[in-house]
Amino acid sequence: MNLCIDIGNSRTKLGIFNGQKLIERPVLKKIKLQEMQDIIEQHHIHKVILSTVADYPAELDDFLEQHTFYINLTPDTALPIQNIYKTPETLGRDRIAAAMGAWHLHPNSHTLVIDAGTCITIDFVRADGVYMGGTITPGIKLRYKAMHHFTARLPLVKRQRLDHFIGYSTETSMRVGAQMGAELELDGFISHYKKEFGEINVIITGGDANYFVTQLKNKIFAHPNLVLIGLNEILEYNSQLQ
Image 1 (cartoon, rainbow, N blue to C red):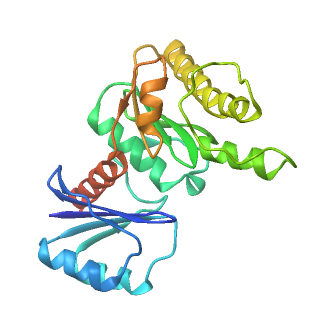
Image 2 (tube, rainbow, N blue to C red):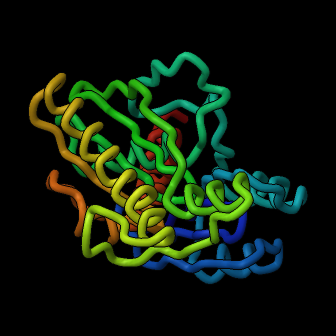
């Protein structure tokens, strides 16, 4: 059994895999060593990969190294796909893992991955398994917060369904700008990739994924577990290299 650990800023997502099949997906508010020990024992975990953007207990590394085949995802970790990003040390672990997960689901085809979270990231993997890079742009909530924070009078508003492309008040004008602006931006990027590369698969994940699936003109598919699937593929690949 494999365990994939994705530590974010506010929560930790776990993926428990039997081979390539995701069988459980616990979510923790805070990662604790004892809890990890219990999960590894209960599920007979033999291989573990960890990806993080936040701090975690230092003793967790020691425990995992002693009791499992353990990979801490870094820019030096071997990947099943080729990474030609010019600054791999600055590339978010979640970006490369999501790209890996999407390419695993659609091998030998051009794949565009959209992660719609605090920031919206767009990442492209060619059909020959080459990760090329992509785009980072503010997410919808971040656009709202920026308009409120950096101006004197604009309110902090929340996302709602739009019924018109012309704002009829300050709040609706902000919604059109933030939400429709993001929609048009993503549709534009997708169209550019299609113009350049032809047929592509577009997969979206992240907190705002379901919203964009219903709003974008281009056909896209939502998948909530791309990062965990990608981490599991990276783990399996490295275990086979041993």
